[in-house]
Image 1 (tube, one colour):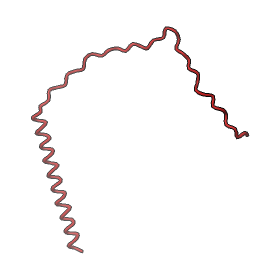
Image 2 (tube, rainbow, N blue to C red):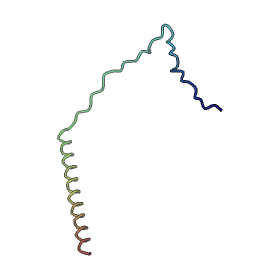
Image 3 (cartoon, rainbow, N blue to C red):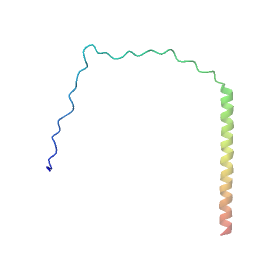
Image 4 (spheres, rainbow, N blue to C red):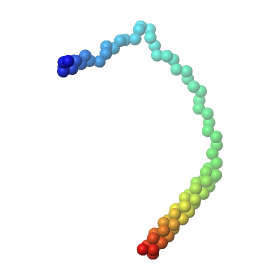
Length: 76
């Protein structure tokens, strides 16, 4: 066995395309559809409700965390 590595021969030879070759034609699509109208007042109301739920969940979890902390400190 020989420890010599084979010499790098370079990249493969580039073969040009045959004469008369062309890129395939791409079919054009129609214009995009229009989006349905949006009810901005309903979207704003839903975001407000989601924000309120998030704030209440945060308040309850912080209160619960402090209750657990106080109970843990009182018992020791």
